[in-house]
Amino acid sequence: MRYRQLGRTGETVSEIGFGAWGIGKGAWGPADDGLSIRALCRAFELGFTFIDTALGYGDGESERLIARAFREYRERCLVATKVPRKAGDWPPKPGTPARVAFPPEWIVECTERSLRNLRADVIDLQQLHLWTDEWLQDPGWQDAVARLRDQGKIRRFGVSVIDHRPETALELVRSGLADTVQVIYNIFDQSPAAELLPLCQARGVGVIARVPFDEGSLAGRLTPETVFHDFRRDYFRGERLRETCERVERLRFLVRDEIGTLAQAALKFCLSHPAVSTVIPGMRRPEHVEENCAASDGIPLRPDELEALKAHAWPRNFYL
Image (cartoon, rainbow, N blue to C red):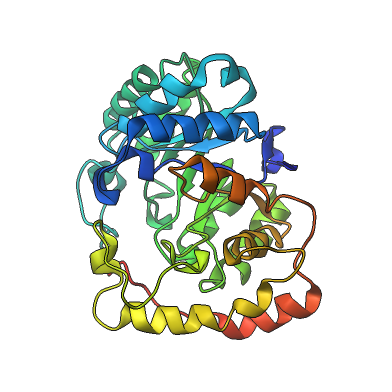
């Protein structure tokens, strides 16, 4: 495993992190807790030092499983979690005030719940699970974050950017109020590279790249006949799955002697941008941990491959 700086925080994290949404079940359907814990333990053994979870992942189940798996690895890992919105639409409608989505006392309450779930005294990185720059001047959430810092309950603060809308966090990055931003960045959605990633690099804001596999398609294992038993039944509804699989097939040129799988190539794409601190694929099995870890071998995509991938950007939002 190779390591990178998490922006200006002074923290060093594994460039492949453990995305813990799936182990919380919920939208991803049933999961074997024993298998999930073995996956977490295998990640720790292989040098993963960054875990991303959320209070909303299975109503805290993901956090509780992480606590069960920690044991002797706790001091080596940085754990990031998130405060779910209390009310309002996802994504927020224009004009929705921060006090509706993230009232100050709600941020504090959720942080306390996450601390209990994680069996921790402090959260390494607390994030708002939704963000829009309209909320930048609202003092409520800022006061809650400052209070939690002063009480020693959180070390760092960041936000998770609205799906496929990296422009909604530009002013936050400029403000210096966030240590990190988490954003969808993958071969299909390259839009953060236009403004957000260069700005984060210039301002020393850590970047957590999420959804590197486009909910599984860029791992290269889906077919038009794949049947889903989770939220992807809607995500890939209608002709979406067929078209996605056709586009994925055009990416097979990335698999070569040095890069064994399309999943590894997809991770290497995310890591090719110097602003990215860590990329967080979801994992629920030890063998997936091992495959993803193997992408951190220091062998980058070639310049000609990165240039060719620009033509494979695919602007769309299957979450809607």
